[in-house]
Image 1 (cartoon, helix red, strand yellow):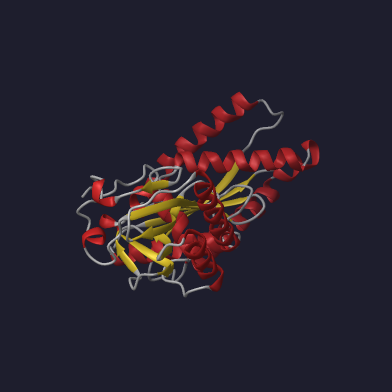
Image 2: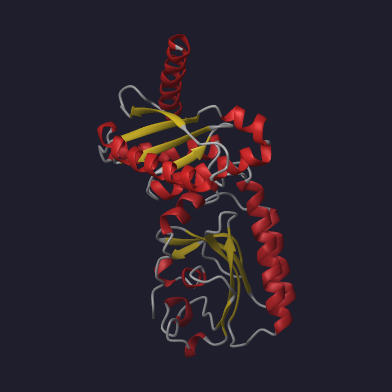
Length: 322
């Protein structure tokens, strides 16, 4: 048996997965309807919508098996999400990756597998839509196209939930999605006695960009700044767009005294972007940094509120000074 490798964007994939709040959720008819349809169309005993977590494969909808999850180490989906296309295994007993897999030699005795990756809007693989049989078989061209169609339907259902947590312009977490992810990150930092620092960004004079160059160009500027944030900060940091021109980053395992280094890198990247883009305006920002104190900040909301208050007070000072 060959255990699946981890995707190169594993942390970003897990962050996206966490933001959806789909793991360990209740059964839903909208997904069960698709697995029922797959069993009937392909005449197979097993159809599953699975989500690949850090160390397990969890079943959002499953027909034909009593399991609700398996170890990722033995999962078929762990292999499927490494690619972009349908993975078909006509006979697992003849495949070096699966011939001695516990799911093959024991119940549910999988001899045929076909799985299509389920992809989030940001391109990360969340899991798979799959069918299985107790006998070897294969799929024809039309059946393979049908598998893609069904997987796309699963993606559309998940996107309905993702819309509630992802900002479509920047593809970063929106306020709700950010708070959900950041709250979990703070709990981890508190449990491990690790520092965390929140950075609140506000793009300077951005309304003038919209007024002078139009909202389409303004959207391009917001998307460009979002890309810079993703490039500069670590995958373990939580990044979000929480307002029109407001962005936020929670730096995990990072004290406030360490934040100037990463802000310097962001400043250099932004300077280089402005020099090369030549769009008629320069992106610039103000930033407030607040270090997480478990005794003072009982939620990510309180941490955000403190940063917002500091930023508002500093703006008033700047207005008076000018």
